[in-house]
Image (cartoon, rainbow, N blue to C red; front, top):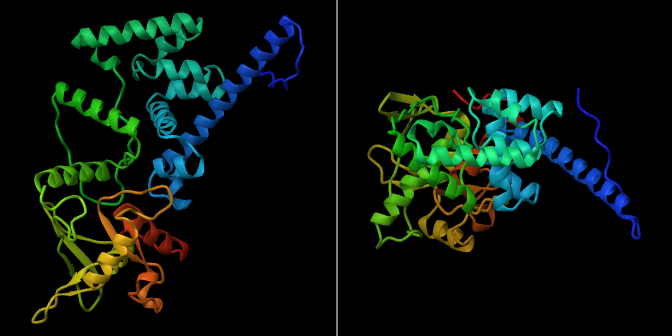
Length: 344
C-alpha cells in the first residue's frame, strides 16, 4: 500500500512562516512522489523496449526527443532505472512508496543484490544519515579492493536480442573498473547506445577511424564491408560468422537491399544506389542520421523513403540518411505493422 502524500500546495504570497514552511514541505513531498512514478514508468519503457514501438532505436533518443530530457537527466534516469531492475527489493520499495526517489538515488549507487536489505534499513533514517553512510561506503570501496562490489554496477544496456550470436568477454577487476568508468563518461557526454552490440561496434569503428587518419570520419566509403549471400530461388539471405552460417531476417534483408553493392557471378558489381547520388544524400544530410533525436555519424546507410518494391526511385528526394540501428528499426516496424515475424 502506498503511503498518503499531500498534494502540492498552490503558491500564494504573504503567508506566515509556518504556513510557507508547511506548503514547501508538502510540495517537496509531492515532487518526490512524482519523480518516483516517473522513474518507474521510464523503467517500464526501457525494460520492455517500448521506445522501439514509438519509432526510436534507443532509449537515449526517445528520452531526449519525446520527453525533452537533457543528456545528464537522461543518463540519471537510465542508470536509476537499470539499478531498480537489478535490485528487486529496492524496486518494490520504490513502487510501494516506502522508499522515496531521493533516497533511492543514493542507495542504488552502493547497494547490491546481497546488500540491498541493509541499505533499505539504513534508508529508514534521515536523509543526512543515509548520505553519510553512502559516502563512507564509496570511500571504502575506493581504498579497499575487497569492497569493490559497492561501486556503481554496470551501466544501462539492453542485451542484444536480434542476433543469435553470443560473445562473452572475461575481464580482470581492473579492466571492468576501467570499462565502467569509460561508459559512465559516455553517459555524461550523452548519446551512448543502449544496446551492447551497438556500443561495441561504435567503439571498434572509432578505433578503426583513429588508425585511418587520412580517410577521416566522413570517408566516402565504409572501412569494412560485410558479404551477405542471397539464395536466388528463395531470396533468403545468410551471413558467415565464427559460429557458422546464420540466416538474416526478412526485415534485415530489406534493410540491406536499400544500400548495398550487388555481386552476381560473371557480372560487374552494381550498387543499388549510384555512388554519386549516395554521396549527394550523405552531404545533404551532413553525414548524420536523420531520425529525430539521433544524429549519429557512424554506420550510416541510405534509406528509401518509399520502398523500391512500391515504385520508390533512387532520387535524392526519396532517399534519406539513417544509422544502421534506426534503419533496422524502420524495416522491423514495417513488418510488425503487417503482422509478420521479423526474426528468423
